[in-house]
Amino acid sequence: MPFGAWLGPDDRNWLKAGARIALSGPAFYVALSLMSTGALARAADMPPGAAMLATALIWAGPGQVLFFGALAAKAAPAAIALAVSLSSVRLLPMCLSVLPMLRGPRTRRWVLALAAHFIAVTVWTESLRRLPDMKREGRMPFFFGFALTCVALTTLASGLGYWLTAAIPSPLAAGLMTLSPFYFLAATARAARDGADWLAIGAGVVLAPLAEATVGGDFDLPVVALLGGGGAWLVGFYARKAAA
Image (tube, rainbow, N blue to C red):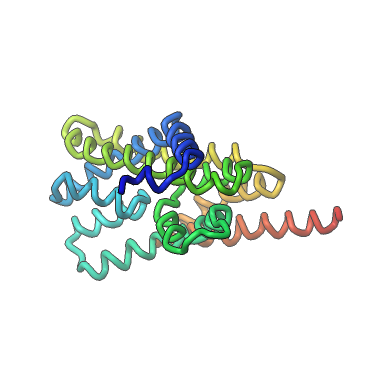
């Protein structure tokens, strides 16, 4: 049975709306920022299909950097799997904030598990920004339309990056990797709703370089999240309590 047969007319409209939003900018930003994963795959002596498959299966950029870096270092497969898994732990709070908005009264768990795979920085920021204002029945098809478009375009870009490695200077490849965090910061600021959100953003900007210099070892992001995000949430909580 064709995939479209599982969807009603309204679902297909929401799916197309998600794809249109992705193609309006976000999908191209994340595709450009992860194009250099193709170069990482070539450096690790992997075929171009490996670069594209890694994008589809791992998706998040840091996980792919760890994956191909560990392959280049000829690390043990178990160590590679553990490193990629640990790098994905930072995505758990993102899943916990988005999945409740997607869940409906008849949503199956395997659908939520599938949706969780696509939640990374770009999909998370746009979901937080757009899903709360949508009808609940339209959220899931919109989410998949947006996420699948981002993944598909980025997968193609990873393969393209593999073949363009010889033509792209190293500084340009490094610059492409910075597009994703800059887009993330801009999208997060655009989605900020109150003072606590802005406080969390400011705390992240200040604490991130300090945590990188003092903590490092892939534990800097959880530390920034706990201190910056947790502190901003507490400030907002007590501010709302005092105003009530």
